[in-house]
Length: 277
Image (cartoon, rainbow, N blue to C red):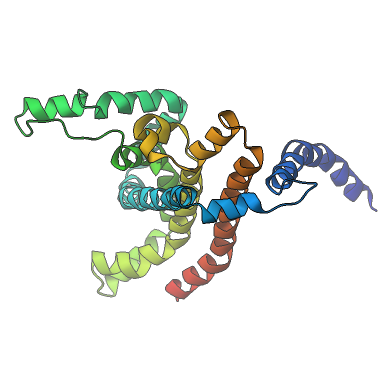
């Protein structure tokens, strides 16, 4: 072993030890508890997919995460295009404004959305004041309110990867496309969109993964009728003390995340290469 190799190994001991003690070991413990070791039983996993209520919650979590990701993409991509077209100083200001909500507590942001969406909230009072509605629109304690708040919190996760992809495109490519007779729409479809496909895939994957684990927003804005997997895990840990089933739920979410990540690693580069060709 060379001196540089020994030094590198020494420097890696501390971070690897930290990851092993505080991440790998708890993760292995969670997986083991989900199988009720040392007895080893898969009853918790069978219960997840055989009991209709739990299956509905699992599928609802996937659906809400997908819908949130789709709306974030529809809002985030045009926003990223707009920011990319700004002069550098204004672009820096816009990026700062987009990142500003990350400095606020998630709990505080949910309380703000409650003040906006409730029956006597700002939005309903404003619509009634304009004479547009006579009765309050139900914007809370349903799936709509949950998705609105989740989109508000997660759309930057799409904007930033797409913005990075847009800024990496040489300006000469658009000029060359225009000189060959392509219009703005054709240039977007045949040049810009394929070259930002990696940013789209990364942003959507990140948004979907984060959305799967949302807990506070469904609890505050969705109520008991909009329970998601994270809420079901908390219920089994705090209320019924069913630790094996709670860890089976958490492990199932983790497995779904890992499958999505590796699907992205395998499929996305090929798709990008195909579009670029």
